[in-house]
Length: 437
Image 1 (cartoon, rainbow, N blue to C red):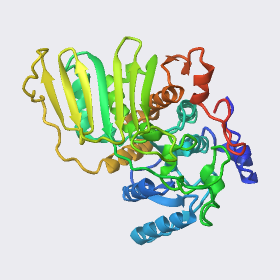
Image 2 (tube, rainbow, N blue to C red):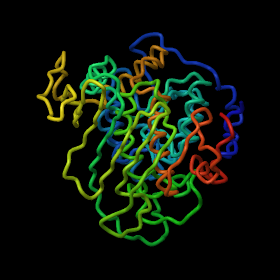
Image 3 (cartoon, rainbow, N blue to C red):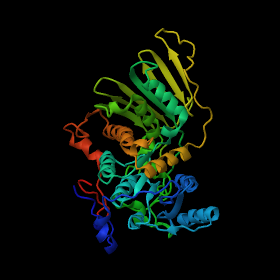
Image 4 (cartoon, rainbow, N blue to C red):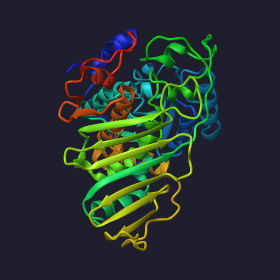
C-alpha cells in the first residue's frame, strides 16, 4: 500500500525525506517524560481543548495551528499567559507534520480537514486525537483507521461521553444483560438553531489563509456564512447537525449495542430545513431509521426548531427499557405490561454530577500513548469510525431522497453508483487523497 503523496499535497522539498519517518515508534522512558503536542484548529472548541490538554501533567502544547492568523495569535497569547511559554505559530497544518519533535496532534479544525490531518499525522509518526466526526465522508474514515493500524499510532476519536462514568455505568448494565437482548435503540436530539440568513461572496479577511481553510474542498469564493462556524451547514465543509451533535448521539446507541453490531444494511432518512429560509444546505430536522442484518433497529431524530423534549437515549430489550438522559443518568423500567412499571433501581448507583469529562478523555488518550496500548482507549478510532459512518449513511439517504442498501464487507452501497459518490468526494487538486494509505 502506498502512503499519501505528501509532496503533491505540500510542494516543499522538506517533505522529500518524509518516508524515513514512516513505521517508526516513539516510546517514553517514564511517566513523567514530556509529551510535545500541536493543536490544529483553535476556534471555540479548539481553544477550550487547548487549555485542557495543556493542563495535563507531562504534556506541553508546543505549536498552535490555525489558518486564521488573528485567532492563532490570540490562542497562543492565552497559552503564553498560563504557561509562561509562547508556542510556535503555524497556519498550515501540513508543515506540522515535518516537525519530528512533535509527538502528537489534537485535530479540532473543520470537518473537511479531520481525516486528512489524522492520516498525515499517522504517516509522520505522530499520534492523533481527532474531533468528531472523525471524517467528512465514510471512505476517509476507513482510511484513517487503516493509517492508524499500518503506522501503529494511538488514535482516538472525539466522542467524550465514552469517558463519562455515568454513561459507562449505564452501558455496562446493558452489556451485562440487565434489560435483556436489545431489539431497538433510539436517540432524540433537540438542538435549536436560528436562521443564518444570506451572505454574498466577498474577498476573505486579510488575516485568513482562505486556500488553507478551504483545503480539500472544491474551489469556491469566500463568504461570511462559512467562517467560522456556519460551515457546518454546507455539504462541502460540514455534515449538518447529524455530523455535528448527532455524531455524539448515535455513538451512544452504537456503544450500547456493542462492537459486534457494526453497520446497518438498510438506511432511510427523511427531513428538511423547516421554520425559515436561509443559505444553508443541510437539514435542521431529520429522522433516520437504520436496520441491521439481524433485524435490530436504530432510530435517530434531530429537531432544529421544536425543542420541547429533552435530549435522550433509549434502549429497548426483551426484559425492559432503559432511558438515559443528558449527563448519563438513567431510569430502567422492567416488565412487559401495558402500564409503565415503577422505576427500577440499578444494582449500583452511578456517580452523580461528574464534570470534567474532556480532561478524562484526553488523559485516557495520553495514558494510552505512554503505554503504547490502543486497547486502553475509551474512544478507539475504529469504534468511532463505525458510529460516525451512521451520520454519513443518513446524509446520503437524505440527499438522494430514498432508502439505501449497504454492503457491510465493502462499506459501499449495493449496485448504486449515485449513492456511492456520496461516500467520498472530489478533492481539490492540491489536497488529494490516494487510493490507499
